[in-house]
Length: 197
Image 1: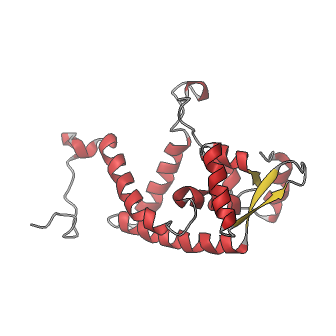
Image 2: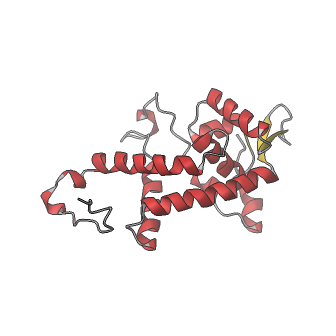
Image 3: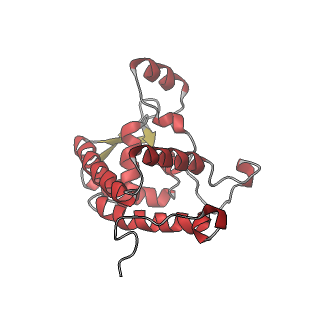
């Protein structure tokens, strides 16, 4: 017998019954498993997989950063970050350049091949996300993305703030201003104020 999802229709959830479907701890792992399964194929061509993809996103949308700065920003162990950047560089997708303000610091920059890989992978990943969220309309998908991003920004912090954070969890830096769409006006002001890690 077909399941309700394979038949194309979802059963109604009785939210008042407070059953298992209403539990965040049940829903999030299942959604993550589905995303991991479908998304892993989309990032298969990127050295470093999903983490390599995150590096490409960060270095093409934010101000240039050092390898250590990227590790802190993305919540990736600095040793693992070295392997990821090495693999991306070996593939010709990134290059390390001395920082203009401190020649001892090497910044990670995307190459044209890296930008092309990011565009292809992003398109494939959006396709996988569309399959995962196929039972949501476009507005609901946008709302889900935005709400999850807001939750994720503070997910690693305790109720009392950064001092209560789990020391074993490398939480990414919550600095969404780094990912703001740049214009001629914002680039000049943000570059002046924002320190480059």
